[in-house]
Length: 246
Ligand code: BTN
Figure 1 (cartoon, protein in one colour):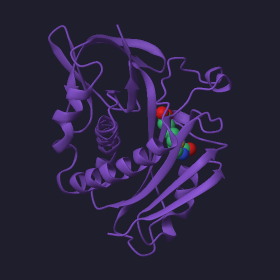
Figure 2: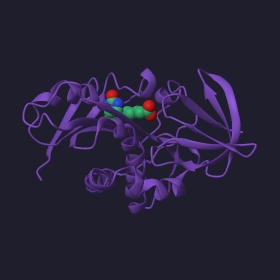
Figure 3: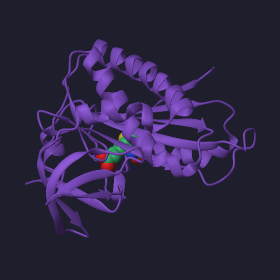
């Protein structure tokens, strides 16, 4: 299957660009920008940028799986990023739902969005825009902007940057194919093994308020976080709550 790869110097947001174009795409497309001026994170947050600071790209990919299952896709992408980085000798963990951590600090973020307009050539498929941002460097100007002070970077050479992009694309395509046939279920064990908070005590926040505290016992086949509190198990959906280690 052919994938179009576009590399540009600068844009607002590669996710916004592909969202606008998704209805007209005729093949899966990767858009990589050397710099974003209006990078977006989850929950309306800003993905900050400075020259060469992060690797920022998006992929537009058609899936036959029902839209309801696409929440699990962002978890699956975390596994894919972790596998890619491990190939380059970088060990990372995941923080539910989809932060990638290095030494316990955020290294990369994932933003999955769905195109609402049907694609002209494949209207039966769900075209999903998968945006990935990986910190490469942390210049002072950036560290002061990032609200989450705990950020890590990869500090790669140019050669290794190219290798990283190639490795990621290769891993992601394999992951999408497996997700398309088997869904999130095929990744649950791998995801749990990578979870930074596996078997740890955490506090669950809803609307910024601490609401539950208990032990993380894993994610289920819907991608919900399962918390054990006084012998009772509760499932939380991504987007509703956030986690902090107790
Ligand atoms: C997060 O951690 O909240 C997700 C961050 C996602 C950032 C990437 S960078 C490439 C793509 N384009 C964007 O505007 N956002 C994503």
